[in-house]
Structure formats: structure tokens, C-alpha cells
Length: 281
Image (cartoon, rainbow, N blue to C red; front, top):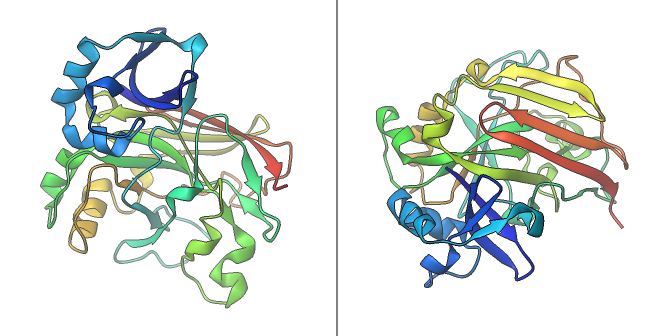
């Protein structure tokens, strides 16, 4: 099952991608605001399936796909979770930073290069979407709480990294959370369709040039560890986004974005996310 948000001319709606269209399931969740994907996720898969059985099919030609979720309770991102020659010592525990939901944009939306920042890079990441909340989860329980997976481009302004501002290594949210710095989508692909989240190919192109090619198997901390660790700090909630880190580029050096660029990220069994790039007006 592929959960999406879409607009067919009447505003954001939640749906399930099916063949040549989308099943509009919003009417089955009348107590929720239209397009409230976090709320839909909280109802569970049985409710999605019941809703889809009676939902009208909206043709793809008459709709636009939006980011599959724009109201996550939390966006939590793993930092340095792939071996990187630029980071000589691997962390002994997972390290995280956050992004704001205001950074989220959808498929085909434009990444805007901020006026006050420079040296903007793409970071392709597999993102787990929590479907069932919980606290103090074991690693064995962790994946039972994942509704599905999507792609998030963790766009980053190198001009605002701590290395530049303070000369010290570490994650810094402000470099990560400018408006448009979290392209997301195209769908939340349910966990049963994805299978093992650590056997997926990750590729990223910029203007048709392949810059990243890796496997999620290379991650230092796999999702069960990340989810279990986070659940010791706070209660996970339906709709939480957990970004699993970005593999380094093939060359070892990032390629900075410029107006007119086009970014394409592909994660096996999860989908393809494409976005154009422009300067902030």
C-alpha cells in the first residue's frame, strides 16, 4: 500500500495510490482535518483498508501529489550514520538533530536557495514513518511501530555548519531547516512492501549526473537501534519521521546546488523524488 496526499483542485486530501489513480480516503476520517496524514496513520492499517474499499478513484491526470505528510509530531534525523572519510571517528551512540515541519515540500516542488546561506548540498535519506506510538521499545519491537517508509532530502547549508561557525564538529539544526530543506515523498510505502529497510539501494543524481550510489546496509546504526534508542528519551507518536542518515557522495566531496539544477533521489522499493532548484526571491 502507498499512502499519499494529493490535491485535485479542492485542497489537500489523503489517499492510497492504486493503478492509474488515487483512492480518496479522507471522507472515512471525518473527525480529522482534510489531508491530516498523521491522524490517518494513527487509525491503523485496518482503517485504511476499510476506507479504500469504498473510496472513489481520482485519476492521476486530474491531481497533483503533495508531500505525503506535512504535520509530523517530530522530525528526528540521524547524524553521521554512514562511514564517511571526512569523519575519522564513528560515534559510539546514535547522534540526532531535528528539522522543522515548515521545511517540508513535496515531489516536484522547488528547493529555494536561501539569501543568507551558501554551499547548499543534497543528502538523500531513507525515512521511517511511525505508525504506532510507544515508549521504551526494545530493538525487537521497534520495526512493529513503523507504518512505512518515504524519501526525505535532508538539504543542508554548509555555510551554517558548526565547523564553519565555531570550528567544532557536530550537528546544527539551523543549517538543516530553512524553508524547503526537507523535500519528501512521493508516498509512504507500507513496511510490508519494502521488506528489510537495510537492503535498499540509494542513488542520487544532480542534473543527470550520478553523485551518490550506496546501500542502506552500510548504515552504522540500523533502524531497530535508532528507534529503540529514541524511545528511551520520548514517546514516539504516529506520523513521527525518523531520517536514517545519508551515505557520502561517490567522489567523497559534495556538489553544491545552483539555481536551475534538478535533483533526483531514488531509493529501491520506496520510490523516486525529484525537485528543481531556484534562488530564494
